[in-house]
Length: 167
Image 1 (tube, one colour):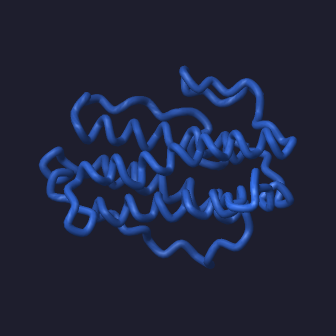
Image 2: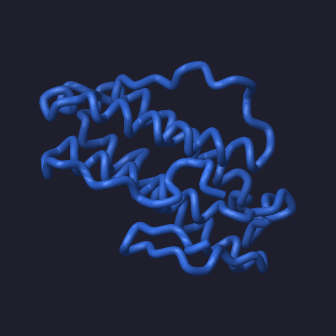
């Protein structure tokens, strides 16, 4: 279970600057996504609360796309990642790898470097209120969907402390 990133939150950045805050946001997103998807069954992927909603599997794919879009906008394109994901677990692994890669790339940026990043014509700030905020919203949906599908998430995750469940 500890082989994937974000079992626990990494130590916080040393600086409370723009880059440090963004790194911590990515850490929190990775940590929450990891535990929202822990123990999901392939059969859970088909769950949708109503006919017009995305399925749980489609939500995971969407979060994966948002993480990739944020990396692209921050000039941190993903390195070749092997075969395209197919299963729910494939997408889970790919998304966590993307978020870890994004974190590592952010550690190399300065605050001025962040300000130079854009989503098309939009400034850096739109990365926060666009793909990253959207991804965090969808992680909350994953938790709701899985409870409604009869497969609640793991117990003992310390969301405030940033600690995964004790073994």
